[in-house]
Image 1 (cartoon, rainbow, N blue to C red):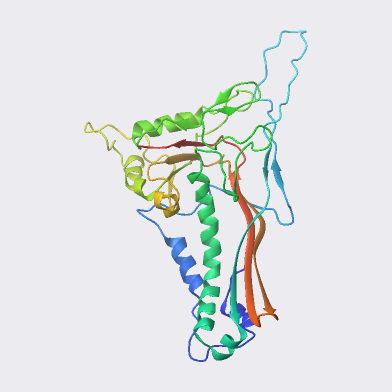
Image 2: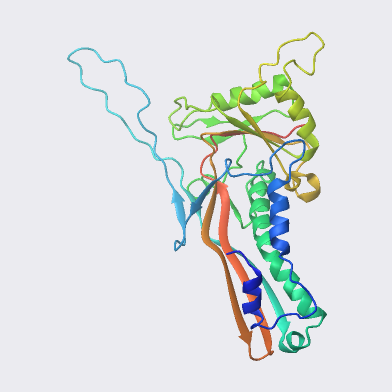
Length: 330
């Protein structure tokens, strides 16, 4: 729920500062976030992550099954070959809460002093804090892609039945005894390494070893800010930028969306070299919203203070490893 000037008035029981105009900083900051681009790379992750409303649920489980991918050759008068269905690994997510609290004494409200003014400012920024927290947690899913997650706000594919495997790894097990990789050897972004990543995406198979329709359409490339320039050179120039022979760049104009954020930088827990390609139609990434942002205002009689609480519950993870490939970079 957006926190507006009217909400703040209710929070402070109708007592308004007579000497100042309340500026809704949250709207300004959220607006800046929505328009923040670096070299035309978007920081929005709506297409990358499914955003699922799980209101009222205390757990969500993903359990898929392998199905019929093709018919089998059969002799005349021979029995029809039966189909076997194999359950995939169980993935489970439970709510994790994020919250902030603002407390201001009744005396501060009555005096309209600095603490009161600060409370107004902080309340107006809580909506931005909510947006920023969701974005940060989503990019954390990439920052912790190469090892089994330990953060409480994240979850891995298959973290119940067989133990968690990193989102990007070379040993994803299937149900017929094989392992599969969505990890490409460390390399810089070039037209050749992009090809290796796309082929790894297109060669992904289901739990019975049958091909899956990955990587054939629109794709996301996810990079830290330090790789935006070379990524744009690789994807958006008609000729290959790494050669001098005027070779045609086959990746130019084939439906790429470049995604970047400061949350992916090494300074913020990410990497300045890692990059990812995600299938635009079959992304396994998901945000489970168990409780949307809610605000509660109450009066603490013991401390004689107004209290304003904001919270939401969610978890960010992957319901499969297929649909994404990663590269630690160099």
